[in-house]
Image 1: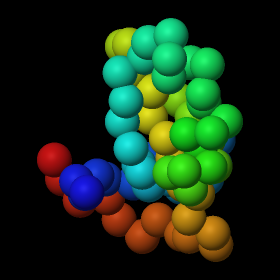
Image 2: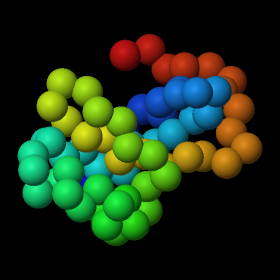
Image 3: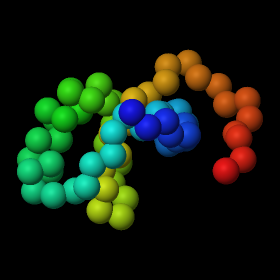
Image 4: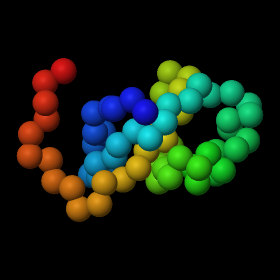
Length: 66
């Protein structure tokens, strides 16, 4: 699995579990894929679906430079 930087969304911090290209078969099975990837939320950007897992009780101390 590839490591990704944490994502801040709606005042929560998430880690990217998987990134999938959006297509009809993926769109029809989002709930199943969330369960398989242990994801709490799915975001869509530029034709990709990002399956995210929320980090409980996380506090951002500092972001690393890119």
